[in-house]
Image (tube, rainbow, N blue to C red; front, side):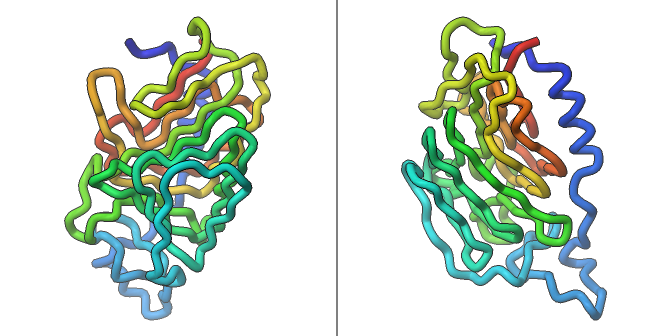
Length: 232
């Protein structure tokens, strides 16, 4: 059964979505002779990726247990459930491209006490996308992003976040800080493993008010684009 969503959070998130990333030109429309930020790897149906990011790919799997930075000089491939553990911070530089592996349902899960600092810019958004070849990407190619916090919720005990990961959410700190998602694009994510057990484009579990979520765009999701769980 779905949990009751936080109405205030929902309204705030919708405001952020409404003023999400500025529209960029589609690949087939990139006719500006001065444009240099278009990558042949971009899917023709989606906004462009950024040519400043090289093609070298770093595979990421398992647990991130220490402070880690993902550089925009690399691309990153999520294989299976990748967890940012309690006490660790994952920093993602502006302009970084992260792809989700389809066979292993690559997903990024921020556990309670972990943080993600994905602070992109309007000119260099952070892009989470499918690892499928351009032209063959589709909804549900990979899992998505899950952030678990320590804010209050309306469920008994410590609920496990839906979708299959080994991650709990909730606590007593309404101002809990799980980090920053700003100028971030998430596309071709969202997997419904079973009824009411989905990984969405972006899932928030009892994320506190100290967390910053601004200018986040979710496109072509196989399940809900956004879903959040917390107190009414």
